[in-house]
Amino acid sequence: RKDSMSTKLLSAAAAALLLLPASALAQALPYKDVEAPATWEVDVGGGPVYGFSPGGKDPHKTNFTFWGSAHWKGKIYANGLAGLGYNVINDETLHVGAQLRPRWGGPDDTDSGIESPDTGADLALYAYKRTWKDFVVGGRIGRDVTGVSDGWDFWGSVSRQDVTPVGLL
Image (cartoon, rainbow, N blue to C red):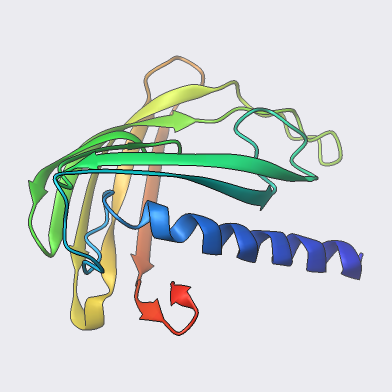
């Protein structure tokens, strides 16, 4: 069991290091710019991920997951996790907007008896504010628009991003 947990943690850390630079550039969160903003920006990459597979592969194995994201002036953006979004308010410290987010389905977890919903999409509204010491505080509220699931989805977060000796974290 201990080796399995170590593998999971290592895979999660590797995936985070590979995905953070791309996902941090122009999404819903108003992180401090680490490079001059561009009119158009496209990022492509990928890496190992444990416990998640948008293609429906076994989540109990380490899978290679591709990454792609694009944005126009930080106003309109798209990627495989946040979906297609529009920052209605897009100033240096505040992002308020809407996004059509994918809701990835997958195989049922037979070990725990959990049934996974099919792949669908949520329509979400969000607001995130960069605050003291560049911490970003905010959240989103979303609702499935494909009929796959019922109910509302609420998400709140506090996060911070900075350039460190080992890279962008």
